[in-house]
Image 1 (tube, helix red, strand yellow):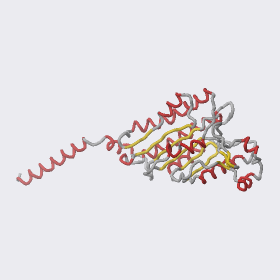
Image 2 (tube, rainbow, N blue to C red):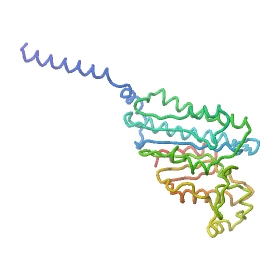
Image 3 (cartoon, helix red, strand yellow):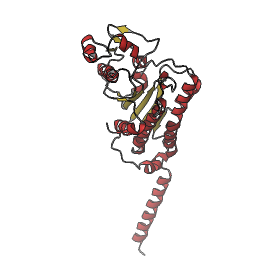
Image 4 (spheres, rainbow, N blue to C red):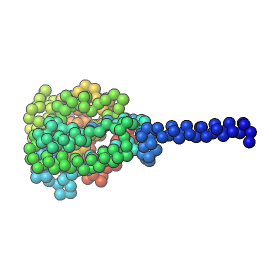
Length: 304
């Protein structure tokens, strides 16, 4: 064999060995990348998903029973659907592009420390340095099981202090739920009524609260309710000036069935409020069985 042949053979062997050495030093995330890219999803945005849970007496099976499915159980299933959409999003991204967050909030924070511990354990920031298949499986499992424990503890405590939703938007939503270079999504689980004893503000016909008794008191429980709202400027006091970098999905609206106009009224209150605060995108959905809501929830998260 010629000297030229041996030189070529040596070069080929050297190239193969160099390639193997390089492969052996690959970062774990590069190895995981080929394993988790199993679901095709068009979005490469970084998701920042937050939940705001209303743990008022709306979740009490004694106060508000439902023979088809208790309202707290619906909440748990809605949370699971959102987390599944988050999982689909992550598994459809390249590892090097991962920088996604999911977390859960209350206002006010429950006095039960076990609830707070569980919620803290549901905060995840997934990026290329910490992602593994086991981490993705952990998130999916925890969001499928831990929220029920939160509701079980809240119901067992039987200390329903209301939900200060207006104050959350006033003081916390910008700091907690909105970040630059993210697609920020807030999922609010509520029956649509807002009340907290420490946040009762009224400015003319604008308020920080909405209850069935208030609706009856101001006589918005008849067919002329919408005209009265528009003419006399009823609604929520805006709690922020510019939420254009926030998308909001409201789930669980549960109007008093003694007033046939109440569902539409509640949705108008929330819609007008979001418009006044310049929310970037929103949907407001009445409580329904989770099997009917699953597609709606996932479409909102995945098909922006």
